[in-house]
Image: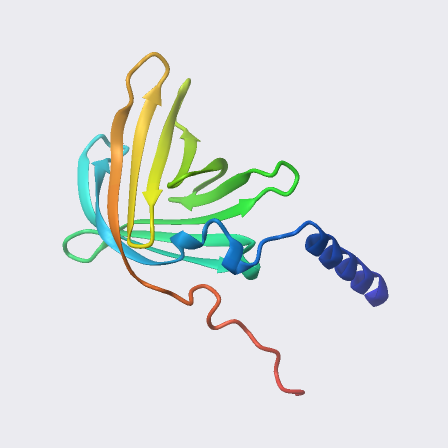
Length: 183
């Protein structure tokens, strides 16, 4: 059984290498990697406006094959009022990126399209409606706008964050578990 598993793993690794998976330095998502902070505002599900301090920490895993994102929004008193986690990966079957998103007990996988200066991703928001998030990002700034778009109506801005890069991060790769020394 161990030999079969080892053969399958070796075959899978050879297949991954032959498919030309990008290394961390080649990832088109690497501009996102780091620690970010700034203002966010919008309209919540209760239709009440909100303003908060938004932080994002973003980093690679699996040698850049996936990018993980944690967003946290803080009220003025330091209370965490928003917390979301996402995994961005390339679908090897379609060649398209996708975002797996988790927030408030909900999750979903959504198309994630790279643009010349950022990205766009969309989530369903009811019958014939979506929320489209459009981001413009470079080495120092990240601006993302969410628009509620219902068929036959003009878009309504429901979210905006304007972040500044605080610096690099070794998250989530730091602190990985090493094997014990021959116990």
